[in-house]
Length: 97
Image (cartoon, rainbow, N blue to C red; front, side, top):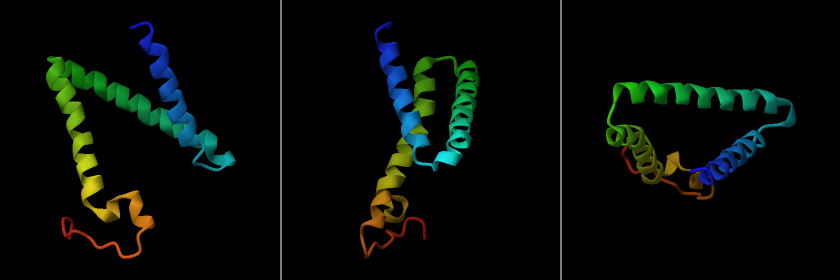
């Protein structure tokens, strides 16, 4: 566990830096604060969910299901994905209309 934590911290820091660099230089401070606030609220909600859902397998399932739904929606609707910017004739699949 001791050798895993520095690697995870490096991954988190790299993601934070990459997200901050999406913004102009004068907005990076605000963007960094916003990103960290969302992370802090997420950690507080995770603590609340862990208190309410005592079994760790059910907790893992509870926090993983929204991501699975998001990935399915991301790949099922062409207007939801980033690849729509590169295709000229993207047509909706009719899921949301």
